[in-house]
Each structure stands twice: as structure tokens, then as C-alpha cells.
Length: 263
Image 1: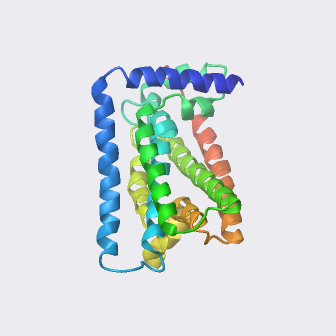
Image 2: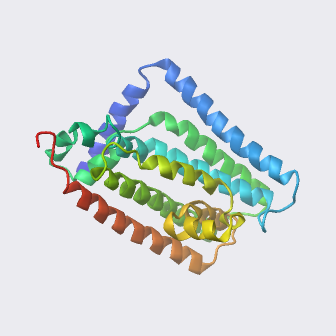
Image 3: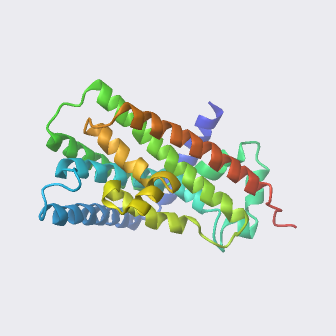
């Protein structure tokens, strides 16, 4: 309950900061609409030429886009702002402001991951969920309890993978404080808006096992469409757990390299 109270306090402070300027809302709304528009327009252009993409229909691919938008919104909402605050020339590791985090009687990884929130990212989250709803209607089948539960589990696994990768990249900041490692991932993550099977074999391998963007987005979309196998479900859950453990170990190893601002 202590951590729940802290989360509520973090969210409250972040909400006050976000709503301090009215223009922030309209800028965030415009950005969310542009992100949605470019994604749907890109898929629309593709499916105006072909009926399927490597076995993916228009509704199934739309579901994949909805998963991508939802995960991207969750990243911007609750983990991106905190983890990215550590990196860069003005980041807390470089400037030594991380000292104030280390002296608090709370788990450092928790504080580094969830201190700062971006409540206006709820606009993006709403649009992502809306795309998932439209895709479900166009798929033309009733969402059963099993399919719904499978979708939730795979989406949670995808978010865990997303968090683990960002946490691992943040851990690398302790070796090179001025470099924003997450920028590299952002470019790769955008590839997740399309089915991983569309890419060449070497890139498909990278997006499945090295930087599992394909697992984050493709697997939940398959679950929503009722086309996911039990092996794929168990594989995504196991991969998420493995990446989370590895990222936590890397982050804590990097944290031990931190010498504070006074050293």
C-alpha cells in the first residue's frame, strides 16, 4: 500500500504540472491525432493495393496498429518520462541529481521508473483502445472470455518487454551518461506497427529475439484475432520474464557504478 500511495502522489503532481498550461492539452491532442492518422493512412495505402499482407487481413493489421498505439501510449504515460530523465547531458546521472533519489527510503528502481508521469498521454491511450475496438468489430467475431484473457496476458507481456528494454537501455547510461540510448530503440519500436513476418529474415530474427518488438505487438494482435497458439502465449510470457530479470540485473549493476555528484 505504501507504493500505491506513492504512485498516487506521483500521478497527482504530474497532473498538476501537465495542466499548468492549457496549450499542452491541445498540442498533445494534435500529436495523438497525427500519430493515429499517419498509422491508419499508411495501412490504408498498403491495403488499397493488396487484399492481405503475408496472411494478415486489414482488420487483423488494424488490431496490430491498435496494440502498437496502446503500448506506445503506456510508454509515454508512465515509464518513458522517468527513465529518460536519467539520461542525456541534462540527465540526473550526468548532473548528479540522482543523489536525491538514492537517499530516499524507497527502492531505487521503482523511483527511477515511476516518478514522473505524462497524464496527457491518456489521449493517445484512448485512441489506441479505440482502434482496437474498431478492429475487433471488423474482425467479425465475438470476443470470448478465453481470447480476451489471452489478449490481456499477451498485452501485459508486451508492456513488460517494453519496460525491460527501456530499463536495460537506461542501465547503460551509467557507462555513458551523456548518450540517450532510448533513441535507438524508438526507431526500432516503430517497426512494430507492421506484422513482423513482413520483414527480411535477419530483421525478423532481431525483432523477435534481440529487440522483441514483434513479440510486443504481433502476439497480442494474434490473440485478439483468435489466431494465437498456446506455445506462442507461453513463449511470450517466458520471454517477458527473462528480459525483465536481465534488465533488472543490468540496471542494478550499472547503479553500482554511479559515484554521485560529489566524487
